[in-house]
Picture 1 (spheres, rainbow over the protein chains, first blue to last red):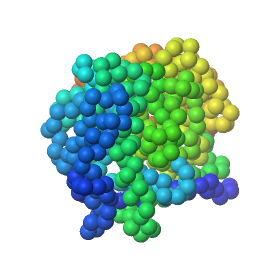
Picture 2: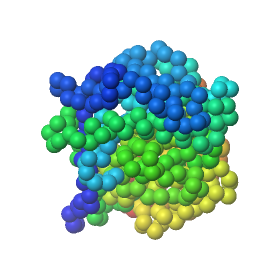
Picture 3: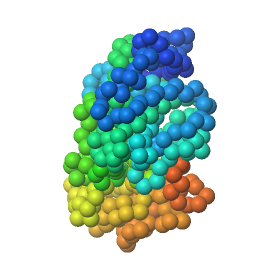
Length: 258
Length: 157
C-alpha cells in the first residue's frame, strides 16, 4: 500500500490574550508570557455611523466569569484570526485565544435578531459555556450589541450590517496580530490535508442555514472566520460546495444569524 | 447558525469542530473533504440540494459519509433529502441532528443510523446557546458507527 500524500499544510499559531482593556488606540501586544488587547475608546461611535440602519451600538468588555449580564439574542460567537501567509486552508494563520467576540442585537420595536427562538436574557442562563462553539469560563468576551431600526431584524441587510460593523472592530486587531513572528506564539498546531491511499474514503456533509431573510451562512471570506468578501449560501440557493478539511478548520465558515 | 439557539453552530464552533478534527487525524480514513449544503426555503430547492449532494459523493467515489445539520423541524426535510440521495447510491452513512423528544419530522428508510445531539432534559429546543450542539462525544459515536457500517459492507476497513 502506498504512502500517505500531503496535499497542503496549515499552521495555526495561537496568541493567548489574558487582558482586554479600553485605551486611546487599538493594540495587541506581548504582555509577560501572554498578550494584552486594547480597544479604542470611541470606536462605538464610529461603528454606529457605519450603517444608517443602526440606532445604537455598544461594546462591553466582559472579564472571565462576568456572565450575569442582560443580553439580546446571540447572533454569533467569533474568534479573531488573520492570515499571516497564504490563503484560507494553507500557509499560516494567527488566532487569538482567551477572548472571543459575541454579537447580539435587537430592533427598536423589540424584535430580536434571530430565527425561531431567541436567546435574550441573562447570559449565564442563556449560554452553555465550555463548548466547542462557546467561550470557556476563563475567556474574556467582547460583547457587541446592536440596536437597529424597526423592521430590519428580519431583513437580510440588518444582520449583515451588524456583522460588517463587528468586522470593522476586529480589523485593527488583526493588523497587529498579523505581524508577529515565528516563535512569538503561545501554541502552534500543524494540520495536513492528507490522502491515505487504500483507506476508506469518507466525506462529511454539513447542512447549514440559508433560507433567506433570517438565515444565512457565508463561506471563504478574506480572513479566517471573517465577514468581508464571504460568499452567501442564500445566493447559491443552498447548492453544495466542497471544502478541504484544512479550509474548513481555517475558518471557512461564518454563521450569520440564528 | 441554525434555526434555534441551542442547535446553532457558531463561527467559533466551525473553527474548532470536533468531528472534522477527529476524522482528519484518523489513520484508517481517507478524508475527502467537507461538503457544505444550504438549507434553502423552498421544498423544491431542498430536494435539489439533497440530490446534488448525493451526486457529488458518488462522483467522489465516496465509501462513507457523516451527514449533520445544526437545525430541526422543517429543516429535517433537507437532511432527509440528502440522506435519501446518499442512501440510494448505497453509500454507508450516519446522520447527526437534534432528536431528543421532538423527533425528526421527515424520515425515510435510509435514516437508520442517527446520532442525537440533544443534551437538554426536555429533549427540545431550549433557546440556550450551544446546549444541543455536537460535542466530541457525538463525533466519536458517528465515526465508530460509520466504521461499523463500512466494515459490514466492505468486509474490512
